[in-house]
Amino acid sequence: MGIFLLWSLFLLGLLTGPGASRAPMVVTGTLGGSVTLPLKLQDGQQVESISWVCRSVPGAIATVTLVEAGGPYTFHQAESRYWGRLSVVGPERSLQISHLSWADAGSYRVHVNLWSSRATHTREYSLHVYEQLAQPRVRVSTRISGNGHCLIILTCMAESRGGAVTYSWTPLGPQTAVSHGGSVLSVTLRPRDSTLNFTCMVKNPVSNSSSLPILVPPSCTGPGILGGEESVGETVIGTLGKSATLPLEVPVGQEVEKVTWSSRGLVAILQPGPAGEPILVAGTQGPYNQRLSIPRHNYSLQISSLRLQDSGPYRAWITLHSPPINITKDFILHVYERLQEPKITVSSQIMKDGTCFITLICSLDQPGEDVQYSWDPRGQGAIVSHGGTTLSVSWRFGVSDSYHCTVKNPISQSSSSIPVRPLCSGSFLPCCLRKEFLLFLILGALQIK
Ligand SMILES: *[C@@H]1O[C@H](CO)[C@@H](O)[C@H](O)[C@H]1NC(C)=O
Ligand SMILES: *[C@@H]1O[C@H](CO)[C@@H](O)[C@H](O)[C@H]1NC(C)=O
Ligand SMILES: *[C@@H]1O[C@H](CO)[C@@H](O)[C@H](O)[C@H]1NC(C)=O
Ligand SMILES: *[C@@H]1O[C@H](CO)[C@@H](O)[C@H](O)[C@H]1NC(C)=O
Picture: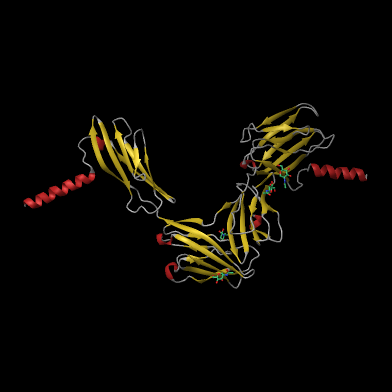
């Protein structure tokens, strides 16, 4: 009797009858790979039919039908986004889904009819899809000295589009502290320490991957850190009139006394407020008046209504209570204006033997910094000069009808074009010449009068 009861409970646990609810079975798969939604049957359980259902698709996505107990079966796939990717595997006839995509993640259900009973047994699955993680990169975001100590902040970056990634660092010890969910490692070094060899590992339920070894020398002033991407003097790009944030991480476990932001002069001083949240204690006067704010929970500085004059070097001084050291971090802020449409002018035009030699100049009223000019089409024999602004071409009928000039800066791009046919149709006078000619005529007319 006891054995019978246990057996019945066991059976019930494997396949649940209608009405009973049970936590779905979690199944994980790799993007692009295959996954099996397992069907566990007891010996002796004879299947009559199986149908597989996915919550996001109407009707069954696949069915298995047996003509007689234990006999051969027919497998039917319904037309759906699973078409061609489903198969039945193993003696239990579990469902396999191949070429997994992000969209396949979700709830599935199987309904099983047995020859021996009239009830339909149901089982639920929750499919999670994860991608194979690539090698993470490590950025050295701060590397600073003070009082013979050296403080280094390493940030591990996983490139992952789906699901949770966990980070771990090796080795850990009294000199290290981990924060930001494990992705950031702060290391405090003294000169007599030896070079440390760190590795960051990223992991998700289907894969793991380790960074290259990061060799950290004990001195901040000595040779650089190998293996990481050093970003001392981080570049921040802003758009005129918009806002930009200079991001600052403060090493964990360190008590901040204040953070001083400076550029050509003092910009702002931030201090921990009553609740430990940073507050702005200076910087409410001068050119940054009313334009500074601090994002919650950290000492980053946000400058709004950006002006072109805000461009330049910025430095954050972090003064810590203990150890009493200063950490500095440098930034370069570039503020750019959205580019207007460039102007194309014709500087010369010569007709010779049916060929038209033209020189076009692309210009902007307010070019600003870091503007790149390009011409299209370049064609054979086209010469681009003067930093890309000038295009000299020999043009014939039947070649491209117009030339485009594109201007680009880090935040915007704009282009204009000029039709060539009218320029080369003989009666053309270059624009500027024509203006002068007109002026000459007018002056001449005035003279006569
Ligand atoms: C750093 O550690 C890795 C493995 O963790 C090892 O392969 C590598 O040789 C080490 N590099 C140095 C210079 O010790
Ligand atoms: C990382 O993945 C490999 C297989 O790719 C596995 O053998 C190893 O145990 C995993 N390591 C950790 C720490 O999960
Ligand atoms: C600072 O806080 C803001 C807003 O909470 C956040 O977007 C930013 O990533 C944080 N910066 C750092 C360096 O932690
Ligand atoms: C830290 O910087 C302040 C100026 O902001 C300076 O007065 C102080 O001496 C510095 N301390 C150390 C330990 O370098």
